Length: 272
Ligand SMILES: CC(C)CCC[C@@H](C)[C@H]1CC[C@H]2[C@@H]3CC=C4C[C@@H](O)CC[C@]4(C)[C@H]3CC[C@]12C
Image (cartoon, rainbow, N blue to C red; front, side):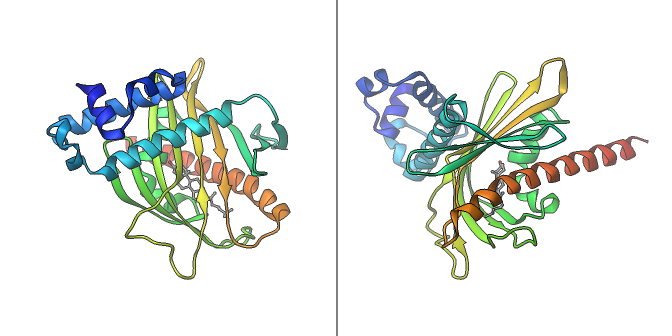
């Protein structure tokens, strides 16, 4: 039944699935899980009426899965990475130039929170991000598809250190887990009611991902790996963009750390 739902909804034929690589196969399996979840929630009544789910939902689920898989492939590739920045606190950023001359950045840091806590902050409470991150003006969830996929509209802030200026993004964001690991993926998407806004440069984020995994022997700490793969658009010198992007990653991590400490402090206060 389930594979039938997947095939019907996605138009994937069996020989096609058979020739898929491991990652893609996992993606199809995960898509099946998402669809069965929607089904159990009553969004899908019968696979033959799959139009009722909305081609849209399937479109975003699929796009979210694909973005995550493509980003994982990039971040897990072993060739071509160069050390870009190394901070005293241990945060490091590697960069790599992809085909088509796009430079991507991989930040690796250690954070004082479990993958679960970070998942809550970065995915479930994504709309609150502007409260602790001054690089972001607003994030709105425009559409929720199942538990693990959202379409978001994001606006970055115009800050002193930000030479690039304000941008807006329309993204599909998708999360998945494997054991205690949490994966967050995303990519630029389209959404009819939010066309590019006058006065804003619409940038494109992704395929991008964040990997969160518990540090062995420190269940309250995580390794945070973030692939930034962004086309900021507009007419800007490459050298400027390639300096601003890793900076933006370090800033993000700094604000996230502050938020984590602030959160622990309020939790401790409320206990006493
Ligand atoms: C340099 C200029 C153009 C951009 C600066 C702001 C950048 C760093 C901001 C703008 C939008 C932001 C993203 C908005 C939403 C999410 C989804 C969440 O689950 C993980 C963080 C992530 C992926 C943010 C990472 C930081 C981000 C990419």
